[in-house]
Length: 316
Image (tube, rainbow, N blue to C red; front, side):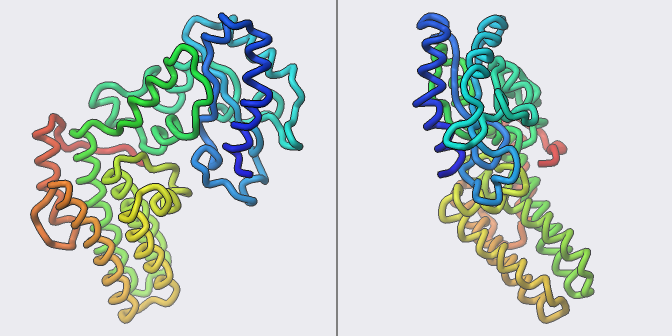
């Protein structure tokens, strides 16, 4: 059983009935309960390796602003329950975990912690400066119950994705990053047999491609450790196909030199061709070049026309 399924079962069988009983129907109607935030389990990526730390029942209770007494009451009820379920710890309420993992707090605290904004980003400037992995963590997992609807209302708005103006500028930036790190610098590092340079360029190229595929798929890319996994599992055929080329590129970086540089270039260009086809399908380019840098100015112009000039994007 994965963590999110475990937490959902605990919420259904234990937490929700006990919270309703302890708070009373009226107060219970003013809380939300779910599992959203940091952790591989919230994305469904957890496995046996994940269980060595901060793994178990990851339940969150959210209340509206100004409901400090209700927050304290919900916290007290949860802490009075057994400290484990089916042999697994109840994180936050019993087993200590980092902030943002599990516990009881306000809706505003949740969204401010991940995005810097109590209701999540609203303006173009707020969207532009919010790291994508933070948006992924703020909206992942599942909501099991939401009496007031406030938590779900914000989450559903954020899950619609970046405003077009910001999304287009991000796509342009990631095209430039992949072209620079992968199609140019990685290949040149391979020709020089520069192992460290290859590792650095490969990591940057993979991250840029994963971010780009997520943006083309209208999804938020998680923390870099899970970016390629998310690309494969959550971004459809485009994600699976691009990820296959990226993993093939990684297999070439062990034995460097001019011969492998050619193989690297072919795999990178094949991945880029898939991305260019998707850019064309979304009417973001009419250029057939597989060098992604050739598409940057066109996409940036579209972003500017949509209301946002090119700007530095946060490190994701």
